[in-house]
Image (tube, rainbow, N blue to C red; front, side):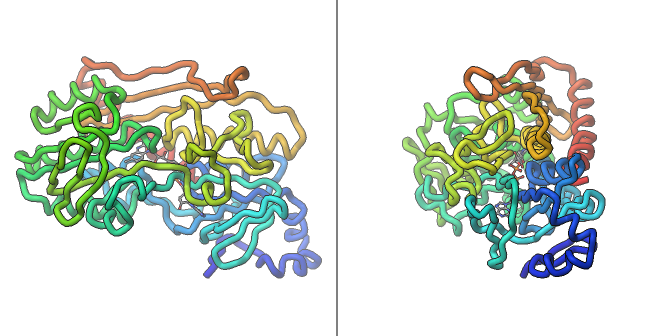
Length: 424
Ligand SMILES: Cc1cc2nc3c(=O)[nH]c(=O)nc-3n(C[C@H](O)[C@H](O)[C@H](O)COP(=O)(O)OP(=O)(O)OC[C@H]3O[C@@H](n4cnc5c(N)ncnc54)[C@H](O)[C@@H]3O)c2cc1C
């Protein structure tokens, strides 16, 4: 069933009829129509900023879920340091304060010639510009035995929500002395420091509740960033608890055996009490199915406007795109979304466009009161047409405990401000 939320919303089918009698509806029809698919960080930010921009634009946001749970800070939930409720956000403010039309449905197709988006219910939304922010999908065919059913036994928890709850329950019921195994996928994937933050925060939980337990990280890579900062913190906070095994030691993860909760690599089989298998990723399914991704599995865009280089009038932001030097993070998605909203508004107004400044500023927890920061500035490179990093700062090893405590406190404030900026 389609659920529409917006005061005085005029049903699509009756819109034309009502427009004759209702001047507001007539005005809404005359406005340029932008449909945004995906109400996560990228999509919600595009919708909110477009709705606020002049010239007035009629913005519709298509998102099946009534509440969005942030992946960022979900590792704190796994450690018992945040409730899932505190990470959940609804769409009321976007609808009521920003005037965005919210359609709680999944988009199932796009007709780029007729310029319509098809919804699961069969209805169609017309657009002048379409923005897609569908996040990532998981390559469940990449690891033998790791299918949809296996995710219920060996959760990835790489989309926050029921998967996070499942993993948290498994960690809570694990016996002290058990092995928690994390399988890290090959690049590129959502939130590059995320698996190592997860290891850190689960170790924080184990240290207090199951101190004889171990954490084993099976990595598809031979290095990660900032490795020195993580490893210094692991030996300071959790000596002997976390072991990181690079690909050169174990080989790639080939298969899982759900029955024995084992992970099979090229070289060895690892049995776990709790196994967190984070599968390889690609752009969200809708982008793949509608031909907006290239053979890498990710979507190429013009970094000036975030318009697809494969299909005119369709823009993409967030984890689904080929973002050059930008990591797949919520901060990147939010920054790209603002640049995209300004570019669309400028195009619709026929005004000049300027190369956007793009940012990423991540906070990563090493323990409940120890966090580091990673801040990067980017610009589109006019020669290569790619997004290049122009300036960066990463916390260093040897920083004082006091500075790290302040960074952890700052991160809490960032979460509140950032989610307000996104969802209103
Ligand atoms: C454990 C973890 C920790 C993280 N920590 C951080 C951090 O500290 N800082 C940071 O910046 N980033 C962090 N991230 C990354 C961040 O969560 C993602 O980069 C961000 O959510 C990407 O935003 P997005 O809009 O591209 O995708 P998403 O936020 O995933 O949103 C996609 C939305 O699209 C919707 N959708 C998909 N298909 C359809 C369809 N067909 N029709 C309609 N809607 C659809 C989905 O329901 C979803 O709501 C973390 C990620 C993880 C997993």
